[in-house]
Image 1 (cartoon, rainbow, N blue to C red):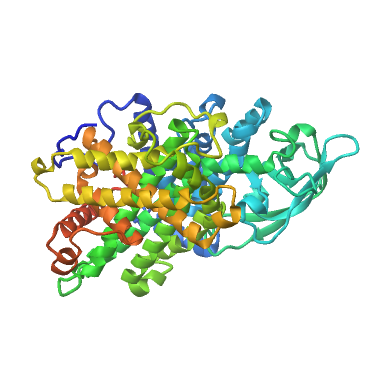
Image 2: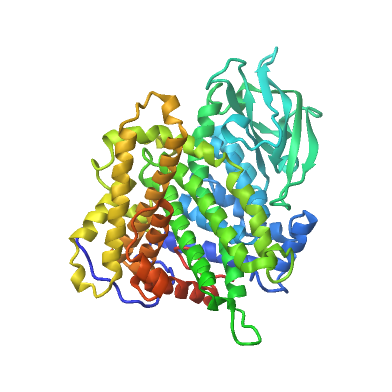
Length: 608
């Protein structure tokens, strides 16, 4: 790939390029329509604005009228594949459609619809034609579908309880037991139930059942009541008790004993959405803190005059750009790299919540006592701070995601890293069409690692570029950082190449968990470099084509890893070096988006 000139800064604002397809434009229109329907977050007259959201959160109830707006929009259609009458064609678009909701209220985003998608994914993955049509009909008709998961794969139970399904004397299965924490338990007609069907240990002990409550005998399912939560207070988490509830054999999704594998296969889709969910909440938090920092006091000064405050705002924006690069790779790889995407979905779901939590802590220090406000101008920060752990950890914890990454790394070290072709450029182009999602092709284990190969390719590209013609200091600095990350990948290859893939005890050592963490940061650098490079080749946004943000993101990641940094003394003490100049351009963009009401992600979308 030949080096190209840096495009001049100009209007872009994340808009699709002129050759974007009609489908892309229609999808952007839907996203904009949902944002407009929800209205301005900071308008006190908006019935779905911050004041109403905070009041509903304090009462532990959904904000009045919000679900009617989503019914009118037809949000459930976004969770149903197009071939079944819905609008789901691209997972990256679904991630973007969730952002207007989660920027405002995770309870609304999760409680109204996303929990239905989580329940529907096993049906889209392994259901028969009749089962798929049933769930599509329920969702498109305005009903809800809830999922009762088992504790081993998802770790999201309030208590250790379980459902069992045993052969019934007259045929079918008899379901018994209870589950304590199920989103929308009391108001869902459809139920996707993970139940133990074998007492034997191992991966064939559980099965998945699809139930229509309208077809079940009266009195066999009891709602055990709602449970309060610290985060997502407006969402309904309730319990269900099954008392010898007989269901037909046709209720089984896939085959008896497929539960564990189906859980893992479903997670491939669900994990890819987690970065978009956490990004949206932190977007609102950053907007809240930026407004606080730019507020002028009586003496004409503001918190923005303090270097540390500027650094926190810049770092938060960089983390959001990084998280969105992870979201881009995790969702688009479902379409483009079905055999390689599992490690990218797990890495994105592992790293994005960690980055979000850390940057929220940094921003809380800037807000000071206002970070505890539960109402008023800054109350949305505390709400997003409470909601974040629920939205990011409800579907398996970070350790579980690392466990799915670790076994793949010795194979990569021996057969993939520095030995294969890079990922296709389309992986990093947000507005480019994608091939249809083919769920049967998704693999639980990755055979190769083309995203890591993209890091190596970007480094080679930067090394071959004639940087003397660029006229900017940040290009050679970016090259230096890319080389450092490639060196880190080489060190990881040596470390994991010495591990016996069959030695589970050694693989699961604390040292190797730490190395897996470093690997996810290397992947994050590769995702950012790939996204930036594609913008230099076919720019749709002047800011994203500027190497400043890519350098600043890699610089921030390199500090986390303890990698060599360019010119640290000049930049951190004098404040006038190229590192500081890049960060100043990033901060200027962050403030421009604050005042221009645009989102803090790769798209810079207009906000209501």
